[in-house]
Amino acid sequence: MELLAPAGGIEQLRAAVRFGADAVYLASDRFGMRARAANFVLEDIPAAVEIAHAAGVKVHVTANILMEQGDLAALPDYFRALDAAGVDAFIIGDLGAAAIARRVAPRVALHVSTQASVANSEAARVWYSLGASRVVCAREMSLDDIARMREDMPADMEIEAFAHGAMCMAVSGRCLISSYLTGRSGNRGHCTQPCRWSYTLEEEKRPGEHFPIEEDGRGTFIMNAKDMNMLAHLDALRAAGVDSIKIEGRNKKAFYVASVVNAYRQVLDGSPAADFAAELEAVSHRPYGTGFFFGEAEQAPNYDGYEQQAMHVADVITADLETRTIVARCRNRFAEGEELEILSPRVPISRVVVRNLAWLPDSTEGDPDPAPVPVPVANRSCGIYRFSVDVEVGVGEGAGIATRTDAVAAADPATHVAADVGITARTAADAADILPAAGDFLRVRRFRRSARSGA
Image (cartoon, rainbow, N blue to C red; front, side):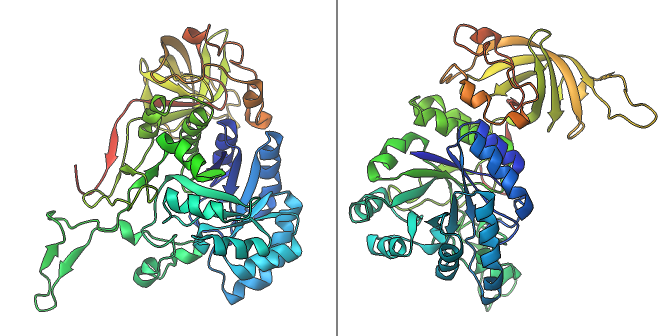
């Protein structure tokens, strides 16, 4: 199955490509369902496509909002520009937008968004007759539903299904609550997620007296869907006829994308799901479930927040194997003597200990080459730090595949300040000497929970 990853911005795209996605989906700053994501200005999409295509990764662009009459005039030039940029597919849920796309950019594949709620073979056949080559099936479908639809669909029409990430409580995301309560329409990409809010009941003859819907004095989260996690069920998705599994998360950061893509890539390539289950607990997430695939989706009525087992602390900029010196961009606090875990594509998790931590100040007109400043703690957000490392622990639990392929290392040469660092060292024989490479992520085991209610 194709592994399709979210790319809410250029950093996320680079992470998805480097950590093993087969394709990415992204949006320009118009017509996408995730308006709060960084997204891409139209002029930057050719460069994004070039990065992805250099690694053999396809680019799907979403234009899946509910189209209004005022949107139509801009669509022909918009689709032509994306076609010229070399994108591989449009993800569209509106019939009018699909018709325009097929007319002005017939080279680009048409994928039917989950917003179209395709849940049966007849609907799939109609879209196929209009030129669609793939449907993103409605999120309310079970695996049995998908298998039955697969049997009666055109053989060369593909099925894409969400396999991981946040679930919308509405029918395939078509919801009016946000528009009604805040004036910001989820169907136009501006959802405020009121389904995640805490609610109480008020009886009209007792104004001001609020009753919890469940036994929780702060209210209940009656529409708060669990996040989906199908890592342990990829064989079942494949058996049902799914051609592409999709990770939700265009509002997520690059560290999240890298972590989740890496786990699914390893399992798709043959590693046991149990070896990488903990990786999905490491990133920020709501309680996990399996959506509608095996029955009714579950809510989290007593819990509205996120938790994570690890904290992303730095992005590796350069790594020198000879001196074991790392230069990294700080994302969260870490300290001298602290043990860090290295997240790197297709290799085991390894651990190193920070030594000789120093802050590297920016150059100024008065001091173009400032000296490093020894510090006990890295705590300047996005500041650049240098430190040496001791390899404290070799291979982490759930090691997975213990080699880095040349293809992965060269996936995005533009981002690899030290492109070849670590390729030869990252083998099973040298596992005890694994060091980070440019583009890797560093994290610490630091539990975090953000919630207004619940255990």
